[in-house]
Length: 329
Ligand code: ASP
Image 1 (tube, rainbow, N blue to C red):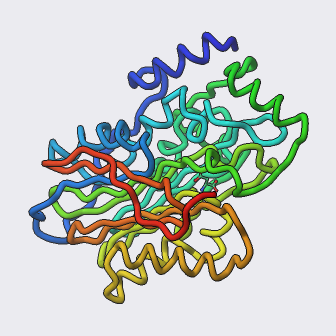
Image 2 (cartoon, rainbow, N blue to C red):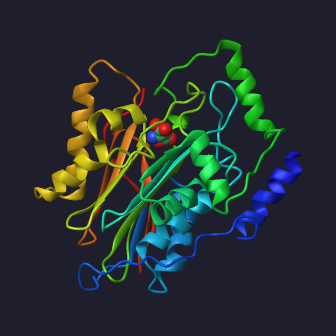
């Protein structure tokens, strides 16, 4: 398939034509009365602004948080200028783009997919795994086979995006694999939303670390590492060097801190500090967390400056700088 065809497919898909979206409304019940400040959605990095707009189109009409986060992060997956989410992301060191994603709601329903190739919306696959199978996670060849059998189509491209190809060829010259030193690697989208009925959901999707070892899976599709929601407490999501989040069950740890009474900011601070303690002497490892509790309080914290998140509520639509512990340089 030519690049033009690939781009065309992406355009069609983003208009909802190429890949049949999963439209099943979330069959969930409200955990609490409508909150004064809901609906509310936050998501990592600047691409979160457009993703939040996608989520908001569901939330402002009284839709479910689960449907909102799925629709929201799919916007980023469709963005062919994005190099860290979706099929236009940077490849692994063998030249293949592999995608990871997960989704979870306040009833602990969750779905996840990892090491998925040639399918445009891994978040839709994660949601379908949640809705249609007794399992939480499918990976690689099996995940792709299942997706193709369940209404998804391949978006195969033999001629990659020139910029991505050029960068990859430049990287091949030295083939240096330095996990965590390049801040540009860490632009996963993680999203948390609270709907008007007080239901929370989260989603996380990424093409992972650029030039990773083929087969490597980071935190983003791992429930409890890159994303965790508990309807009694709230939710958390992460971006950055995924290995650090997996080692510490990062998103789950944030939720557990909030369960014990920490504010979202404090809970994110605690995990960032724990991650630093467990990686003594590691320089340049960026890790950022976002958290939201069921009251609609939210916060974020990162190791280094530069991590920010997009916020959308009834009266706000803006970027917020997360607090941080260290400055670059
Ligand atoms: N957390 C992702 C991973 O380790 C990377 C990112 O945040 O961009 O795969």
